[in-house]
Length: 127
Image 1: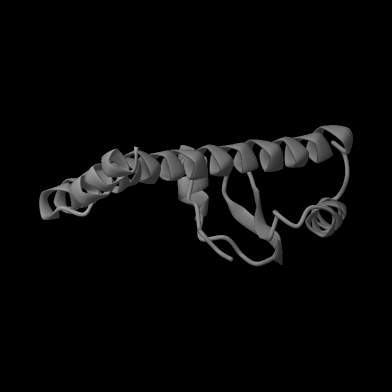
Image 2: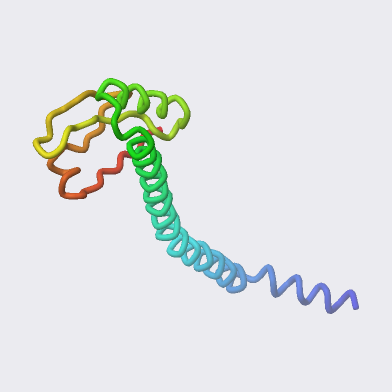
């Protein structure tokens, strides 16, 4: 039994055996890296889209709940929304259809009125 164990250990210590082990390990790491990077990127996009939907839903609810409020009251409600949800960093309020700027709260977004009117999304990755 001892001689078989020594023979096995001798084969495992051989140079060819070590090279094969290194190449197998490197291949596994490479395959995991190839799979992991696109998965992380896809998950990030899913979370950004989910955040957009939640934030848009909250703003739409405020507008539907208080349809006849003044511009100042709307801005006040939106400022309160920023305090309730840490994911909402700020925003700009425009009056339709001309795009007159009513006010802003928190950090002003990079999204312009023309981009918002076209339905474009701008995502910023901030810590």
